[in-house]
Image (cartoon, rainbow, N blue to C red):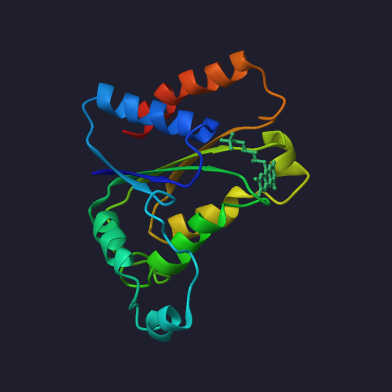
Length: 187
Ligand SMILES: Cc1cc2nc3c(=O)[nH]c(=O)nc-3n(C[C@H](O)[C@H](O)[C@H](O)COP(=O)(O)O)c2cc1C
């Protein structure tokens, strides 16, 4: 099964255009997918005292965590779509890793595997150029890659549309066209 994890609140965003294009490519290829739209789900990314009280035993208190865990345990290929915010992922995605990526349910730090996820595709956008994200500042994608690698996923591909604020329409259209290749490479 393919799962898309989407973290952007505004339907008019470029990230939303990337989501639409990704769905289109999957549909064109006859691939079924599950969408986790964190903002539409009103996911609460904050780890509360209640949540943390059972975290050490890989437990959870937020019922939506159970739903997400069940989806992830059936997932073979995963696509994350989000903007770079403060050199990392939006808080809602960070909280998804905090609350859902539980040890011995989703991730392992001892080389065990609790999901079927083999491949991951990360589609992002940033105000800085991609080169500047990587070279001048700390490569922001590492923070997102770490929980994904902890699922035992070694094949992770990242594609970023940098310089998005100054980008002209043709560059945006070109990036959307490339999503076809990015997704077909994953599936
Ligand atoms: C809260 C916030 C933090 C941001 N932090 C960064 C950043 O650290 N680096 C960067 O290159 N762009 C940053 N940006 C710019 C976003 O990456 C950019 O607005 C977004 O990728 C545009 O895509 P969209 O139209 O789909 O929202 C930030 C934007 C917001 C709203």
